[in-house]
Length: 206
Ligand code: 5GP
Image (cartoon, rainbow, N blue to C red):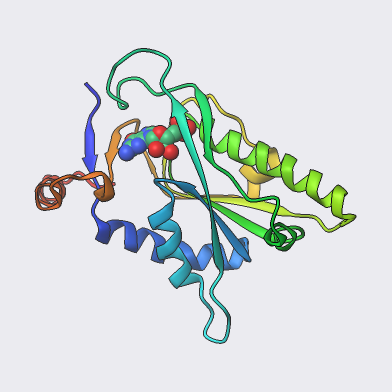
């Protein structure tokens, strides 16, 4: 049985707050792409901390990806899927896509587990942005970086480009291979918070 660790909204807020300074310094993002569903709330919180006093809010685009469970009927914490399915993607028919080209783009998700989802997101975004650049005759380089709340310290199935691993990747926390319970998945948030508080009292921190 995988150990479950409970994370509260407050924890998520503070992880975003403490990471924002580093993100501003190292990645200077001009646009956020949130991977749904888990990346939406961290992306929105992060945006508040990335806003410069005289600057505009960074806009958030959403993509929806899901790991297709092709291994059986087990709980997600028991059997992660292996195949990524696109539920929602960028709208390449609109002018908005032109604004992505040449930008520093921060991809946000809640957790890097097997890395399958992040590999897919980076690979496909790089490919699509390149295609659009060629189509529109634009030569500026588009830079991708990644922020996750938690990175599990384990053998990764997915691979990321070297430059992103070296200088374009930030995890607010690196954890053991536990199952992290996020507050937005809770059906009883008071019970969720109680369990989180109990774990903190017992010295289990994430
Ligand atoms: P990947 O294995 O591709 O890195 O992660 C795929 C997705 O599985 C994540 O975006 C997340 O939705 C889900 N996932 C993986 N590990 C955890 C976890 O510990 N807790 C929760 N709640 N979801 C997870």
